[in-house]
Structure formats: C-alpha cells, structure tokens
Image 1: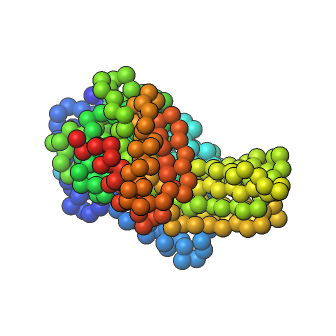
Image 2: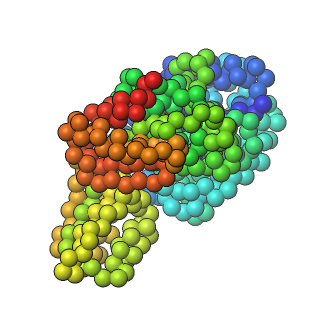
Image 3: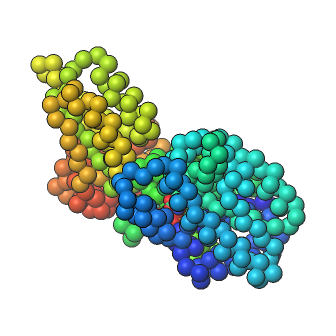
Amino acid sequence: MLKVLKFGGTSVGTLDRIQNVAEIIKKIKDEGHNVIAVVSAMSGETNKLIEYAEHYTKSPVANEMDMLLSSGERVTSALLSIALNAQGYKATSMSGRQAGIVTDNAHTKARIESIDTANMKNALNDGNIIIVAGFQGIAEDGRVSTLGRGGSDLTAVAIAGAIEADVCEIYTDVDGIYTTDPRIEPKAKKLEKISYDEMLELASLGAKVLQNRSVEMAKKLNVNLVSRSSFTPEVEGTLITKEENIMEQPVVSGIALDKNQVRVGMYGVTDRPGIASAIFTALADANINVDMIVQTVGVDGKTDLDFTIPTTDWETCKKVMEKFKSEAENIDYNETICKVSIVGVGMKSHTGVASKAFTALASENINIRIISTSEIKISMIIEEKYAELAVRALHDAYELDK
Ligand code: ADP
Ligand code: ASP
Ligand code: MG
C-alpha cells in the first residue's frame, strides 16, 4: 500500500517527538508499505515567526510572510529525514516545490492548482521514504507560497489524491474526531466514522482537528481520510467517509466552537439597491471569508448590517470598510464574541433540533446575538465568556455522551 501520513505540530514538537514519529514511520515501512510523510512546523513555531514579523508591522508583505513561515516546516522535514537516515532507513525530504505542488498567487492563503507527482514517484521507486514539508508550494509567480493556517492537512490530502494513495492518515494529539473538542468537554465521545459533509462543517465552524479545505479536497478526490493520534498509534482513529458508508446517522453528530471571530456592525446604512453587493464584493475581492450576514428591516431609508469575519482578516476588513464609511452612520467591531455550532446530517429530516439548542442556552442564561442555519448546521453568536459553558450545555442537551 501507499500511505500518506501527516504529523501535526505537537506530534513533532520536540526532538524526542520527531524520533517517536520516526518509529511510527519505520514500523509502517517494515510492514511493507510505501510512505510519504507530510510534516508541520514544530508546535508554536509558526506563531513565533508571525510574532517576529508583527514586531515591524501589523500587515507584513504577504510573499515575505510565506518565505518566513514556510521555513518552519522545512526544518521539521529535514530533521525527520536525518533521524530516519541515521537509523538506516532511506529517506529524502522535499519542499513543497520539490514535491511538485503548484499554487495560485494568493500568498498566505494560496490554493493548490496542480501537483506534479513525477519527483515523488521517482523517489518512491528508488526505495525512499519521502518527507514533505507541509503547508507550502510554489506560486505561479515563482515564489514560495503557503496554504493558510492548518495547511499541512491540505498538503497531505492533496498529495494523497494526486498520487492515488490508498489512505491518508492525519496524526495529531487526539485519537480521532470527537463529538466536540475533548479539551472542552471531557465527556465527548470518539466517533468511529463521520461523513465528509459533517466533518467539513465542523472544521469550517472551528474544530481545528482537521483543516476545512483538506476535508473539502478529500471529498472531491475521494480520499480515504483517517484522523488518529501519534501518541497512541495503536489506537484506531476516525474514518471520514461518504454519507452512505455510515449506517446509523445521529441527528446531531458534533458541536464546534470558533473563538476567532469578529462581529462587524454597520449601523444606519443607506438602504439602496446594490449596497450589500458593493460591500460584500469588496470583502470577497480582499479574500475575506464573510459569514452570518444579518440585515435588519429598513426604516426611514436606513438599515443595519451585521456580519462576522475571522479575526485574522480583521486588519484587511478595516481597510476595506474605509471605502464604505460615508455609507453608514457608524461601523463598529466586537471581538469578544464566539460562534458555537451544532452539526448533523440528521437535521435534514428531524424537527425541533434548533429549539433544543436555544432552550439549552436559555437555561444557562446565555443570550444569543445572531443565529444562522443551513441544511445540516445551526450556528449561534454569543459572548465569548460563555463559550465553553455553551458547548457543554449543548453537548448535554443532545446527549452526545450517550
Ligand atoms: P495538529 O497540530 O496536529 O494539526 P491541531 O491542534 O490543529 O493539531 O488539532 C488538534 C486539536 O483539535 C485537538 O488537540 C483538539 O483540542 C482540537 N479539536 C477541536 N475539535 C475537535 C473534535 N471535534 N475532535 C477532536 N479534536 C478536536
Ligand atoms: N504550521 C502551520 C500552522 O501552524 C501549518 C500546519 O501546521 O498545518 O498553521
Ligand atoms: Mg492542525
């Protein structure tokens, strides 16, 4: 079998942990499989590099950020390869470029355009274990690019899809996908399987155990995706798979929390045709991921517009909103909010799911500021200080520990 394995920041967080990863890879290699391992930067490294850049400016030049941040993954890939070679295993590290990963020019949040697998195939044919530096590629402009936070997951899935690997295993510090973040709710239960769509919602709504774009890619390319732990590699993880492969669908599968959200409020906006289009086109052009848009009923030619954005897009959003200053009486930002969401494909065919969520929060005296729903999710904006309490209350309400 050809296995693509991905090891996240904590799994390679120290030199001893890199050795632990080498042991996992050696065992799989000894079982007769071919291995491509994708690695993250050592935990904390990417944040440290971002802080270095922010010493000079809040909005550093994007392509230089990529030059900076991509270094973290390169360090780990080389160290892991050095460790394996030292123990008599033939291994070779590759940067994103050497692995053939070509992206667009959207520096710091680049999209993968294509993967030329020739180099990796040659290295595998020569009997190598390949260690790819995750989270990066080569942009069309010829410079190194990065794939957004958590992007090593995407590297692994994209490679697995392109090279038609048998499985893509994402090794992290928890042994699978739980009904909610087990660090918030210790009663959370591990799922044996979860559908691509539910996992995509959970990931997009804040469950960072898998990067959302990696799940989207896995669904598109039909990759057998597994989430498991590098600390307990003997424990089977969670399979992310097609909905029809899951026999019994619970109404609610999981709860996600996203604290990295800012609510943008525009008050007294001129209520004219085209205003929403102008604002949200400008935000889209700036690559800002807008969510939960609420417009109130217009009164006297004025209306209020609320929406949420990721905290990382806040600076850029402020710049875009400068253009609309004259269109609103006031624009304000609130970052002491968070988004809690419940996700489940069973919602499509069950009633009373939403009311149960609202009742659960009401009984904890938590005020809901914004609600948005889709076919398989309900999201609520609440005050950030109630985040964990809300997650636990919802987990109880849907009896997810049962
Ligand atoms: P890595 O560094 O390996 O990429 P991350 O920190 O990005 O790992 O993701 C793993 C973390 O995701 C876990 O430590 C856990 O706290 C968190 N997490 C959030 N939601 C869930 C969930 N539903 N199931 C499991 N882990 C979750
Ligand atoms: N090192 C990058 C990050 O911290 C990418 C990753 O770990 O997936 O976001
Ligand atoms: Mg991650």
